[in-house]
Image (cartoon, rainbow, N blue to C red; front, side):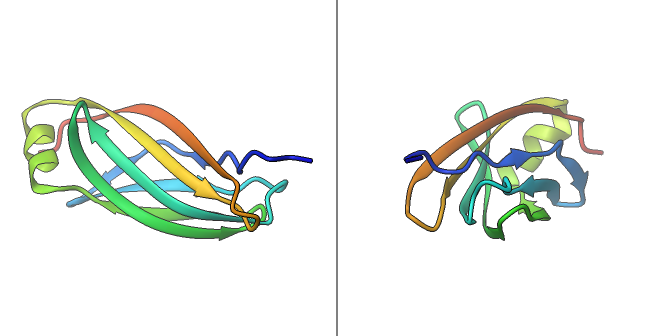
Length: 106
């Protein structure tokens, strides 16, 4: 039996105003993907968004950046770490991490 939770896909973030837009996908092997996506710049919490996806579904999520994260991105481009903590229908959890460089905000 598979006792690991689903490994979600985390797409490249696109800045839009005070938000980052990311495509998150649930694998076809999972019944359900329910969890949260968190972004960090080093130790600075940049934002969090909760989501729930069906088997094989993908959706664009709007992650609202914190004021400190927006200020940090105004100074220069930053490397952000995105962590998705996801559980499936049985409650098994998995953590998926991706790192992306986000351009400087003007």
